[in-house]
Length: 314
Image (tube, rainbow, N blue to C red; front, side, top):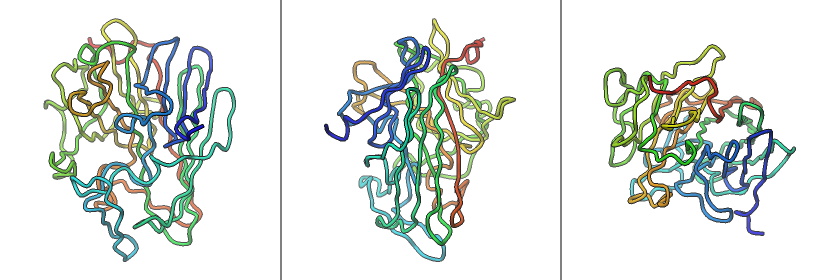
């Protein structure tokens, strides 16, 4: 069996999920047969790194260089056209299955010693189904004897059943966006308010004609401390992506099948990507986690179906 074929099927009540060893990727999530994520055939490379864990940094690092602990570190350039180190070290590696039940699976991996990354870390991710959907819990432990920088993201693609994206509405709880240089997808200034702009989704808006590749922050939590983003079809309940306080950013991306060669049979797709920090945080330091020796960081996010009508246009 090829590593890409190594997946774990999960089930609980009306929910089903499938998690791949490669990249600890969420290959499938559905409720009562209704798709809540984009998927891909087992054994194939996920389009646009869909579902994969991005660590120990998410998104892009400018020129593959950053300074930490008085030393300049030079990462491998993995996005040659933009001269960036992109999406961390673990999305193309096979993670170890360290625990599983019928409704959950935990994967683990260690990094440290790669070009430009001397910081030994142990990462785990637990995918668990329950009555309210999927909860994904991440940890990162500093195995070294010096401080270590850390960031994490997930290329989560949300889907509202079979509804075409252009017929769906998007509702975001974000207060600011981070402008990006379109040539390199790197920050082009500090966060700016979204209120009253084309990036304002505080009121659900239809996605027809909307193109995004945008980091959002200042996420407004609900009473339970979770911030929620909703993708709502015209004739059914919303798909909800939630994050806890350890994920103060989400990057929202609309994929174009004509350009990105992703999901050509379905048309455009939408990623709502939980992130602990924005692009190039290894240089800016914005929301960068710094782990002391032996310290463990924990954060969680999840996906499910909104059952209270939330996310629907008024």
